[in-house]
Every structure is written in structure tokens, then in C-alpha cells.
Length: 134
Image (cartoon, rainbow, N blue to C red; front, side):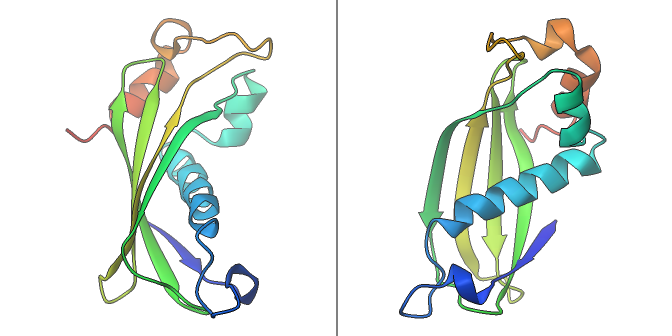
């Protein structure tokens, strides 16, 4: 689980966290999650692999404000070797769900060609498949 503390600059004029920040927190949590399973993003990029975001969805359930702690659970929802779908559940410490979200990613090489991790990088493929929740 990743924890983010809401910064003042992330809030809008009403004192509520601006909706765009949740997507940033997803990235923070995703990078932390990958590192925790032995797939540090720096190492993946050093191997010549880039993982762009191809889709994002967010369902806002409750608001957050300055100084709130947001706990973000991250898991692999689906991975078949080319497309990766990651889920996020963001909660306050009292378990109030503030956002349910997902991001989809593909994997490309430095030339911009889609690669199959199953075929070309089985160690990365296996680490991600092991995390998949069914």
C-alpha cells in the first residue's frame, strides 16, 4: 500500500483536492508498486522498455482536502504480456473510499514498437503475472 499526503497546492479554491491529482497519485503508487515487486522503473527503462499509459478511468467517491492521508492499494487486474491493466483503490485512514481507478499500459521499445514481455522479457512478464488478482 502506498500513502500520499495531500499538499495544499493540490487543492482548488474550495479547498478540495483537484480531480487531476488523483491520476498523479496513481503514477506514484504504480511506480512504488512496481519497485516493491522488483521492477524498479529506472531498471525497466534502462533495459530499453517504455510503458506508456493508454487509458485511465477514475470514479470519485468522496473528497479529500489539504493534509488528508490517502492510502492507495494497487494490484494487477489483467496482464497477458502486451497490455497491462492496473487497479487502484484510494481510501482515507477511516476506510472511506475516495477514488476507484484503473490505468492501462502497453510496452514499447525505444523505437516505439510494441513488444511482448512474455516473449522478449519473461522475467518481467512472470513478475507481473504473479501479481494478477482474479
